[in-house]
Length: 348
Ligand code: AMP
Ligand code: MG
Image (tube, rainbow, N blue to C red):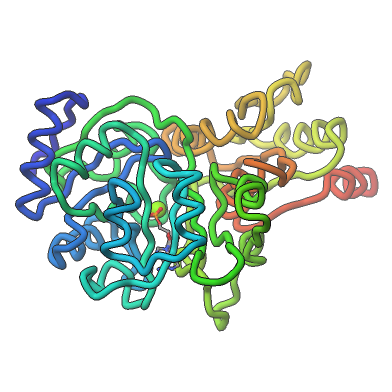
């Protein structure tokens, strides 16, 4: 199959809608990352998405809808979902509610619940509205690779596998949506994203974060969100995070990276100023910029054959939690204290 990559304009949208209506797959930009879309009501299209991504069959997909009215047709709506959707839709928040029979069970990997999101990106909205059906759209990467934040990333993973990629430039947020379980009394974040626990709590009074967000699940443990079990966001390079006071982090990162050939350091703007013996990649000025840049940098490291990455750990407040969740997973939860690294160095 030939894969066409075309700009998001009227012609591109018309072609995308034609393919989606025929049950085919199209990659398109959203404000979070690029999505691999198919008709959510068509079981064959859903199957094709799992196959194109190489996605494990037990990892459910998100159904993208135009807004609250459409969401109510497929999910059992409640007051919590209503308040959160009113506050954050269209935008980077996925709501988990009970699934209605009109939505095929396959999209939820057999779970009784359904993940729903109304994206704000104009291209995504145009597609959903023109199709008239919800669009199942996981991130448009091969399973296990970092999510794509440019059309070129999608092409790298999906060339020859899907017929069309709509190119809308780099994704604004750069990390996947917040996934929030809205089936209980209290909202529970299963995957952190740009809609932060603080923002949710401001809107509905409280918000919990699944404890498994910042640790690896054991094999025998059941996952609140099946995606958390799978290896995610992994670059080819082995990755280690370093936590602690900025000066010590700088010293530790320098020490660890300087003795290796093919190593990069990821750090916030200014942290590595004056250090010349290591190759530094700037994460940006704050967590928001780090979110925007992280997957791009992980893919760049792969392209350039980097074998080792040492990254500064970020504070876990606000959007920092989402960035740290992805960083920690990319690093297989190898997180070290700068002080320990430096002490070990003194001893040896
Ligand atoms: P992606 O579409 O690649 O951003 O991944 C979707 C994420 O949402 C995965 O981590 C899924 O495990 C999670 N998800 C989708 N549906 C459900 C559901 N019904 N219950 C819990 N998590 C879900
Ligand atoms: Mg994904």
